[in-house]
Image 1: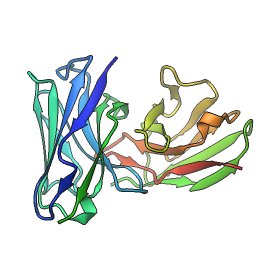
Image 2 (image 1 turned 60 degrees about the horizontal axis):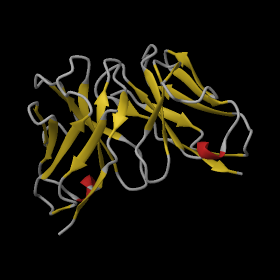
Image 3 (image 1 turned 90 degrees about the horizontal axis):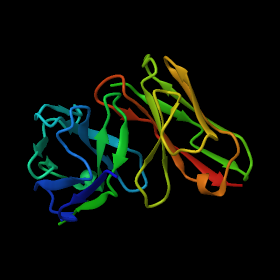
Image 4 (image 1 turned 45 degrees about the vertical axis):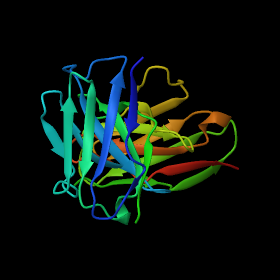
Length: 119
Length: 107
C-alpha cells in the first residue's frame, strides 16, 4: 500500500523559508505514470494546489506562488520536497503531499503537517 | 485560472437521505473533475475521478455525473460516516483548483 509522510518544522518565522519533505513508501517515486504534488489548507478553509513534480524533475507551480516556490525530487531517497520562501502569516496552513495521476487528480495523500508562521 | 464553485456550502441531512452537491467550472473542463471527502482532522479522500468513475474501495452509494461546466456528486443513502466536507477539483488545466467545499451536517 502506497504511503506518503510529510516532515519538517511546525513553526517558521516570517520572511524565512518553509521547507517540507514528503517520503514515499510502498511504491517508487520514479513511476512513469505519476506526478507528486503539494496541497495546502489554511485552518478552517479550503484546499489550494501549490505545485507538483515528475521524477525527472519537471515541475508545475501555481502561478500565485510561483515566485516563492521550489519543488524538488530525490529519487534515491524516494522523497520530494517543498521550499516556500519569504513566508508570512498567510502561509500558515496544513500542508499535504499527494500522488497526482495522469488525469490530474490526487489518489494518495499524506496525513498532513501543520506549519505555523509566527515570530 | 479556472474557478470552481460548489453549492450549497452546507447541507443538513438525515441518515438515509439522498444528497446532491453541485460543482460548476468557470470554463469547460470536459470530464476532468474529481470529488473528495474530508473528515475532520483527516486528509482528503478521493471518491470520484473523471467526473463519474468510482475510486476503488469507495461505496457505490457515491456517484458523480456531468461534463463541461456542470457536475454533481450524489450520495444515494446517507450513512453516519458520510458526514464530512466534500470538495470538487478540476484537472483540465494548471493550476489545478478546488471548489470551496460543501459541509454535510447531521440534521
